[in-house]
Amino acid sequence: MKQKILIKVGTHVLGRENGRLNYNRISDLVDQIMTLRETYQVVLVSSGATAAGREFCQFENEKDPLIKRQMLASIGQGRLFQVYSDFFREHSVITAQALLTSGNFRWKNSFENMKSSLEGLLDNGIIPIINENDVTSHRESSFGDNDQLAALTAAMLNVDLLVLVSDIVGFYTADPKRNPKAELIRKVERITPELLTLCENSLSEGGTGGMLSKLKAAELATQHGIPTIVCSGKEQDCLLKAGRFETSGTYFIPVNTKKKLSLRASWMTTGANVKGVITIDSGAEQALKNDKSLLAVGVTGVDGKFSDKDVVLIQNSEGIRIGTGLVNHTNNEIKKLIKAKHKPKGVVVIHKNHLYTL
Ligand code: GLU
Image 1 (spheres, helix red, strand yellow):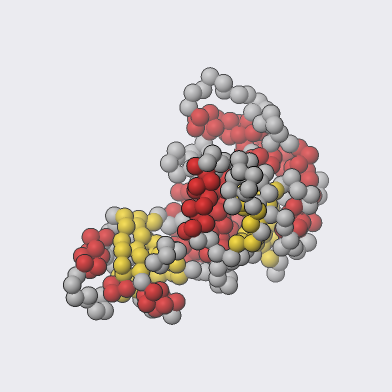
Image 2 (cartoon, rainbow, N blue to C red):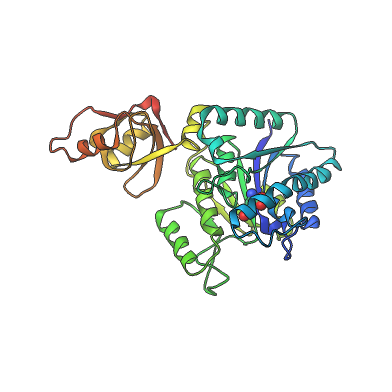
């Protein structure tokens, strides 16, 4: 059985300065993917629909940037897919289009259908080419630049490697376009809250937003045991190198050795509609690692508004996410349990059967 690789290609890699598609670049990426297919089943997440749409019209009078993007994407998506399909057809490879939204990851049935159909395509040697369904995406829940979509899909399909291809060389200590002292970080062992803050600070210096979204995507993927590479699509043979785990960009080491998640677990730890966050102490963290239930005595904090049977995230005292579960109590009940003078013994906040650690 071949390993799986998910490659996400950003708009800036596929677009020219004039905002339209760069056909030479797409052809080169397709050639590299063909070589990768000797070792991997390949899933492609590609932006570029809006860039392709600009080849047809501009909508210069449209004031709302979201509506403009949606209109351009709806015009360009067909063209983008056609360009990929034509290049792949030269190699006798069939492609399939999947347009997804964050809602598809939230609902279990939809998640299940997505996972089975994408796996079915891969098993039949077909390359799924995924993009956000920009036309139906809500303003608040849009993926924007597809990094999160790529990470969610990577976790859903349990891929062996995630490659985020963009126009930046890798992950820097600051925004390299503005700060000459910015240094490239070649290897990230663990994405800590400090690293996220560093990235947020570099954004407030006027960065692009791209690094933060890549860092968050890498965080989700590495928590699911998936090694992640951020590299530049302008670098020669970037995909071939990434496929060999060699990169001039940044390599994010997976947090856990990969464990095969059940469908329900992978839904709960990726897309499920999360209503709150529960913070736990080190004793509870250890108990969870030993597959025990989460007891009220180990809970130190609670955020969000939720009812019993809602999905919540579980984080440790350093703010690192360690799992997800279905709660037995509302947020107010848990608050009361935390404040209680005599900590109640044996009260289960999340039962081990409804709890998934990363
Ligand atoms: N789904 C958008 C597109 O295909 C993504 C735009 C972006 O990468 O910022 O154009």
